[in-house]
Image (cartoon, rainbow, N blue to C red; front, top):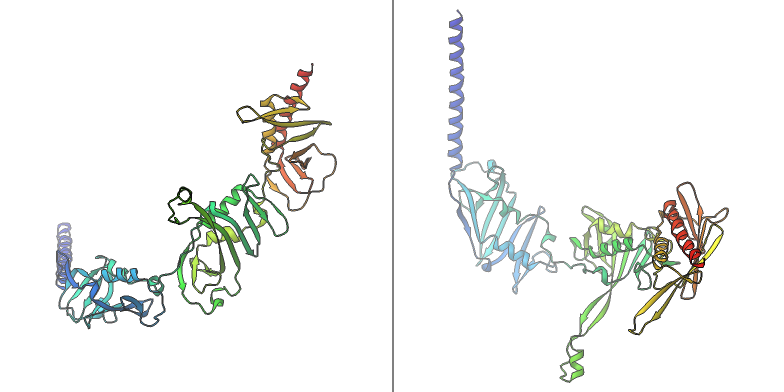
Length: 478
């Protein structure tokens, strides 16, 4: 009984296997008959781009026609549209030779290939003759689109990269302006107006190279923050061309911009040779001068790829990276505050009065010019020549103190200052006093009220360095 059962099961298994094999070969044969797959590519369309007089196709579900007039390509529906001549020529070049991956003959059902209602219809006119290319569904396995050429019966699988040439929007075929590339070193001033308003100006008079102003007061800016702003200006560039002749700024939020960025900069230009042959003109030929320029960028609503922007006075609308814009309009004056409490170059300072632990000392820097016309410096502590290393160690530790943050409101101290420094430079004096704030921080208060939170460890380092100077002085007196 068991043996008979095994034979029945084996028979059923063989029957199922036969059915599966039969189905596989039937489907394979049907597929081969349906596609008539060829081993090699075949050229199915050929033309000369120089002979094409017009081309029409779908862009973003709208039919667009470019036609040639007086050797220039124009948009048939808007002759003022700034057609990118090179982009159209590249498109025509892609039509010169079209090859198919496969040829499908005797295809009765166009709907099966997406050609009953083609996704793209390309028509070109050459020598007063119209030719047509229709594209249907995408074949993922072949990475190709089904297509028909003119009135032929065959259906072809056309390479997918051909179809991508006809994707996008009308403005992908527009020739727009470019935002000027402004080198960080060429920037004279960046003025941001909007919810946050400030002016960042280049300056040779401060160590950071930049001054920051809120419109009322101006002071030295933090070098790293100012450099980041200059880099953001350098990175500004248009992403998408949106409208070449905008008549409704409100559609982009540019009737009342969220911000404006005014950039003053200079570019070095070479003066033309006057053509004179005398020696003086030879020296002047090829000389350079800085040309002053200004650009004002208006920032509107958010777009898919950033912000809508335009230059002041222009009707051309573009988009621009949100990151570059936010790095400028998202900053406040306080972001640019210099966190160096007191920085003075040792070659420019005249004296520093130091008060600590009830004792006041005076540090002085004196300069002289030697016989080789070189400037030499001497360092004094309470009128006596000081050890140069000990002097510089204390000096550098003091002027390089950076605050953790600058306090929004001026600090009102209670009690006596732990440290007091008075800096004298070019006959002008500035005083800063350090008070205990809590167990981790001191508050440095300048004589104008500006206050900084400073890590206590930065101040504590001064104790040993000042002690070394004082002990050196005492030992020399003994």
